[in-house]
Length: 232
Length: 115
Image (cartoon, rainbow over all chains, first blue to last red; front, side):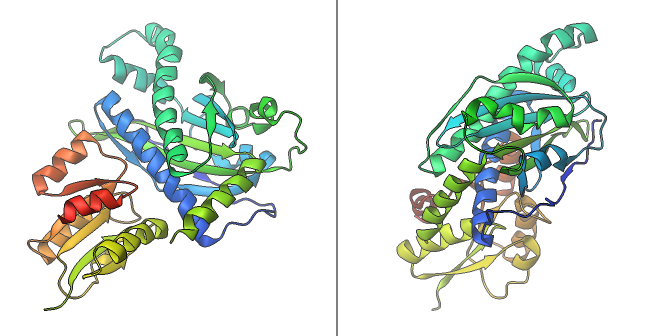
């Protein structure tokens, strides 16, 4: 059984971009719908029910973002990262703490295999899963908003939470010389998921999805949210 | 005879607003009652003819709430509103006679289930 408990720490800094209660509600709902679709895809792949938590949202500086996730499991973590660029810039991460990624590979292959073989297949399998889950998730954002963005190739990563969430390195290529630095702010959205095996009556796999939007994207998202909410 | 009543339960204000707008324009003869979670929904007094329930909510989920509403309102038409439509969840809902509506809810889909 692979249980975890994670949460987002409160942001400590003063935010320059404040979301109204309705805007925050709408952003969380988009995240909820996006990850709901992704969970349905993942459920088909693992042939198990995938349970989702409620979305959490924080506005944090890049520096803070890397320190916001509180892990109860030992690192290193394994992740599939997919950057997106265009009108919205940011990073989506599908993260498996502990040995969660190997559990997933084992489940997907439906076979008992030696650990060494599983580890060999880990990267390739997780990239496939990451593509399906993160694309389902990000596409739902484009459907609900008028913004356009493109996905870069998914990458397989293994490292500490500090390394995985280091926006300075993630977004360096995307920011293309835009002013800003560690004090720039980002939206940090997070939901965790776990599979539920009815026969075994236990959770067999857990992980979480983190979505980070850059500061310029925050302004665009806020504008989009105003338009959407203005329709009601 | 009074208006027919639809109970819409969702922790998202945006989701409630979307449904409210559709009902106001397409089904003005229906009264919409809103609740943000299962506990609040169970305090609703009076008859309910149709219930649209979000699945992923704080407290009880949509299926757990549906089980309670079936006892409170025998014969009520129940729909789970979710983007997360999974086979096992669907089997469970089918066995209970609960329908599914994909999020975000569309006018077209609502007209279809009301038809």
